[in-house]
Every structure is written in structure tokens, then in C-alpha cells.
Amino acid sequence: MSTKISKDDLKSPDQVTQTLRKGFVWTTGHSKIVIAAVAAFIVLGVGYSIASHLSEKKETAQQEKYFLLEKAYSAKKQGFEEAARAEQINAQSKDKKNVPAFDPAKKASGDLQKDYGTIVANFESFINDAPKTKAAQMAALNLSEIYLTYKKNDEAAAVLAKVEPGLKSGDVLTALVLMQTGNVQADKGDCKAAVEKWQKLADSKNLAFAHDEAKLRMGLCFESMNDLAKAEALYTEIAKKEDMNTTDFAAAKEAQKYLRLLKAKKNL
Image (cartoon, rainbow, N blue to C red; front, side):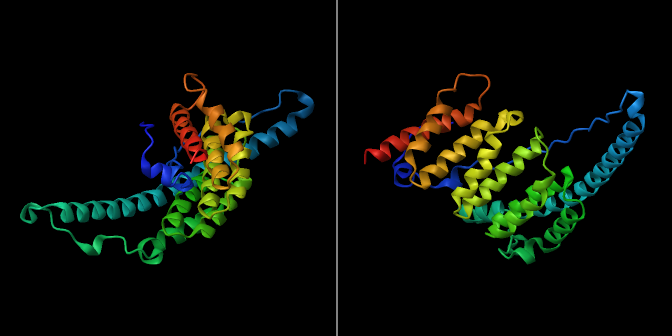
């Protein structure tokens, strides 16, 4: 990743949402059923085992439903992306005879209801049905991305809030939901609320893999709020750990870049 500072960077160092990396990794784990070994608690143990088993069955059933929704969403999104690429190739090519035909009807219209109406409704219904499942959390991440694409930040924040009560300490989806919630708040211009979410993530010992990324985004928000001292402190903390195996190398390189940008900005 290049860390060279351009003139454009110096002109607009506070474009927070453009520097927040997108994307997430879907992972699911199998919950362990704890059975009490002590005879005095055998009834409680069996009861817990049954409850856990039922919960696991519900999670599995919800994930099966989710994958069907995700498949429909992915196909629709891929179609729009292919149409956009075809339009770009068509516009840039000088040899119009050998360019694949472009069908404007396959492009995204820019209207959420026309483009993703049914998919959005299905995701919303699915999340409302079992908001505390991991499947619902993944659906919320996808749905929030759709809402953000169409500048519906309030809706994105609302759908993520529905699944937050079901987040579990140490689960990768917890990190992803908190990170995305912060992204949404930052995109809304509410950096104070964004920092609160990222701080919650940074404070979790079980989510150490996401600490540097969360702190980097916090630094960007502090910078946009003109709290340059806090931003510089965070950038410095992350940048110093470039050679450590426990840090996110990409975050360290970004921190180095933004530290230099911040210092250049202060000297203007």
C-alpha cells in the first residue's frame, strides 16, 4: 500500500468515510453445550443442554434461510456491477464495433425500491424474526450496506441496532457489527457516536484483532472533529507497531500516512 502524500490528500485530509475500509468476513462457529457433571445440578445441566440444543437448531435453521437471501442479493448486486462495468467499457472504448452491447435497462436505477425493494423487505422480515441470531447479524451487515449505498443512513443505523443486543463477547461478528455501526454514524456526520462504538470494540480484550482498525477510524473521526491531539496519539500508537506480529499491517501503514498528513496540516 502506497503511503506517498499527494496534493489532493493535503487538500482534503478529513474525508473520514472514504478512508474507512469496507468489507467483512462471514464466519460461523458451533456453540458448545455445557452439561453439568455434579449430581446435585443434573436437572439444571439437562435443562441447559436442551435449551442450548434448541438454540443451536434455531441458528442452523436461520442460517439456511439466510443463505438463500444472500444468494438473491449477491446475484442482483453482481448484475448491477456487471452492467456498470459494461457501460464504462462502452464509454471508454474507441472501437465501438467490437464493444459488447450495453443494455441500460440492466443498470441500477438509483431508486432503492426499484433496485432492491423485495430483497430489502425480505432482509428486514428475516432480522425481525430472530434478531439475536448470527444469521440476523450477517443479514444486518448486508442490509446496512444496501442502505448506505442509497444514502439511507438512518435506516442503516436502525437495522444494526436491532441485532446489537444479540452480540456476544469475542465473536467476530460482534467486531463487524460494531465496526459497521461506527461507519454508519461517521457517514451521518455523528463522529461522537461513531467513536463510542469503536471505543467499545477497542476495549474488548477478546477482539484484539480489530483494535488497531477501530483506533485508526477513531483517529480519523477525532481529526474531523478538530481534536488533533487525540488523533495524533492514536496514529502514533498504531504506527509504532508496524513490525509487530500482533498488529494489522495495513492499519499501521495507514496510521503512518495519516500521521504525516496531520503534521503537514498543522504546519500549513
